Length: 537
Image (cartoon, rainbow, N blue to C red; front, side, top):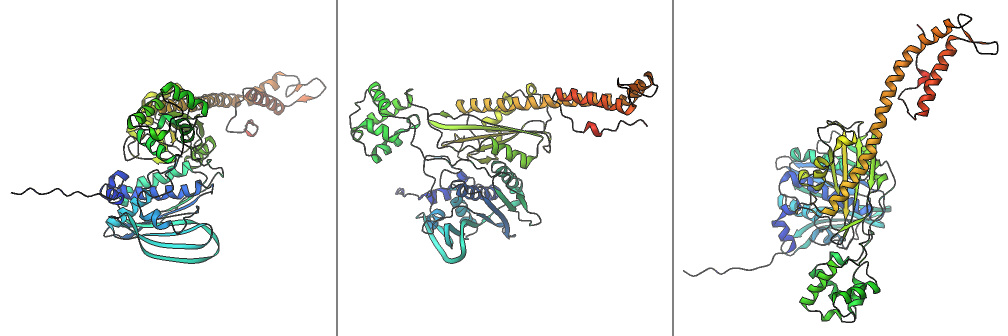
């Protein structure tokens, strides 16, 4: 019996992700609906943040076909828009986009919206619809696009253009997918809520399928995070293939020139010193390096301690003011604080850890801390227990030492921003236990928790003072009356100038003593002592 011949062929990027859509979070209708909302919203916010435009985001999920569970997800923004010549490729070619640079972005793989489009095409067969006006344009461009999965190329189904009465900018993306709203509902609501916490400078409107209510988060602050800058790679974060690509792309006559041109934190003096210690000739051409030489150079670069740490220019932390404003506006707590740590690095990748704590108010008490996790401003809702932040918050922080007894109304926000977030898996929902990041999270939580402890201690003192004051106030009428009776004449006491103090005057004196004592102790009460009723019935 003749053997069958193996057939070999290649897959396009679109076909690969079409076959392995669970990698991008499109494993089932419930997760796919959530993931579609997430990807489109993140694109919308990035389109505004990168050019410091205060975002106004509109999100709508509409049931298109109840029998087939088809939903139309529409997201509009007022961002910079997309030049019309790039629209087909931005939405119809996988691994094409503006994020392939070394700087912090919400998404990194150029998949986001395109995976939603592929999933919609797979489950409903309908094209994605895009309307966009580039910044400063007086035209709105409309496209209907499908993806040629075999070729990883866009198929333009329809294309139109119309002139606007005035200049506008922004993009609307609408895609029909198979979804499960009943199961995705809680995750979608929670995602939008947490997005509003991380972006209190945005107006966010969400219309769910029921249509009976509109969820609105109104902008409460106009300050925005500083946009990240593109930077060169750091020598400690280089690998062999990256080194090969840099050597091929950078025109440098010598190894010393190459290091200075290719990497951040490397000057001529440090490059010369490193190459001498590593056993390389600084004047050698980088093009003459063999594979073994490139491997040796990579190892030496990673292990050399003389380079400056990576700069944080490529990062865009939220900042303490924005975190506090977000927690305060969405959760309405009685106490809120935030900490932004100084930049640090792991394996040559810069990162910044931020922590916010909200306590009391409208937060419901729970038996454990409520953890809100963010990576590069993206809320992480799945795989919470696998995240390094959960390990720290739930077991490595002794909350009793910070005057927190559970059940308690406590929310802890942890935000990690980096050019390379160390996710545990391809789902990008949990952060790995990197020692440098773990240390920074722990220190940030402790710093914020110390502020909470001060607040709770003060609150306890004020409550004790309030109880004492209320007890004392009850006796003021009797004490004042007794002092008046003990004095001469019987119903008043002399004040030294021939006049007499009445019983009411004595009450006021005693009340002023209480007020003065509270002011010296810097204790404020939640009622006005001067309005307290101390009349004798």
